[in-house]
Amino acid sequence: MKVLHISNKPVYPVVDGGCLAMSGLLDCLNYLKYDIHHFCISTQKHPFIASEYPENITIQNVAIDTRLRPFQALTNLISGKSYHLARFENDDFKNSLLDKIQKTSFDLIIFDSLYSAVFIKEIRAFTSAKCIIRTHNIEYKIWADIAKNTKNPLKKWYLKTLSKQLFKAEKDILNSADGLLTITEDDRFGFESIGIKTPMKSISVPRETEPFKTDYSSNSFYFIGSMNWEPNVDALSYLLHDIWPEIKKTLPKAQLFLIGSYMDQSKITPQDNVIIKGFIENLNEIYLNEGILLCPIRLGSGIRIKILEAMSKGAPVISSGKGMEGIHSPEDCCLIADDPAHFIQQAIALSTNSDQRKRLGENARHFIRENYSVNTIARQFDEFARSI
Image (cartoon, rainbow, N blue to C red):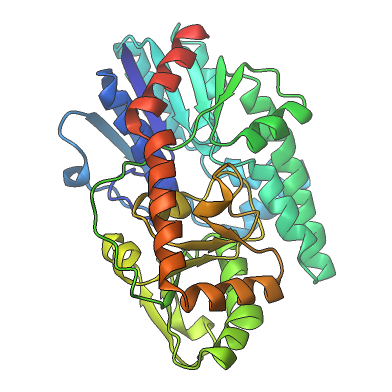
């Protein structure tokens, strides 16, 4: 099967959860021995580096400017058009895509995220290929949640308006596809509840469990998240203000490592034993040696790739219920806490019990091996793609 895979940012190098999700899908397409053609947008935030890609994928890239522009944002606000999507409506992007699909006959076109599908209607006029949109989140809901948690009345009104505009556009785009892939069942139910009629299936992100050796003697803590993503910003603020100070009272020698891109140290209030590591290209050493992943996420939808990744390495995890959405693991694979007191209690107990850390980590690794292997996810995708 000849496939065109379209992404709204370069997949490689893998710098965040979105890239991990996209690279996981490409792993599945490779496993299925599809003829893969990849088309991606690059931006100032996400530059394109061809040498980072696997050699067996045909690559094409178009650079566009998605920087925020106040005047355009105001124009879209007045017109009622979603500014989130308008930033990707670039003529070079559209014309290059149309040129590619007219020169090459594809069996399947995959839009890997809502933002890569802004021209789906124009593209469908020039191809007989089946079109699948793979969503990573329910995008409008993220901004609705952010608005709900915003105290400034003017900012709250603006964010609610953006969410409503995005809701309308998201629904229209998703109903234009032949098939819709969600990463979680919760997202699938969410799309069905707002009237998405496109045939859809929930297929998760594959993770492999290589025979890594995890150090369960380490009882430190770490947080992973790119700080250009509002749900991560909120989670880190919650961790540093409501959770960490109380952990420190009981565990004065405990350390917390902060890991992720755009981790601007000046915006983080200094605290004892909080170490900012920033962006780390290969997180394996963190998962294997730095103790316990804390994921007190409160906003957004989709699946937390960093949790899947940590579990696949056998790392012990404490998460909010929101963070575990879409990962339906048994209770003995991960600790869940939805209020500060419970989160603090779980963190202290796990930090002082190496046997429990090992038990959670080994159970998590087994769960990922049984449910998230590339061959398992690839077969699910192939079955869905051939059914639409």
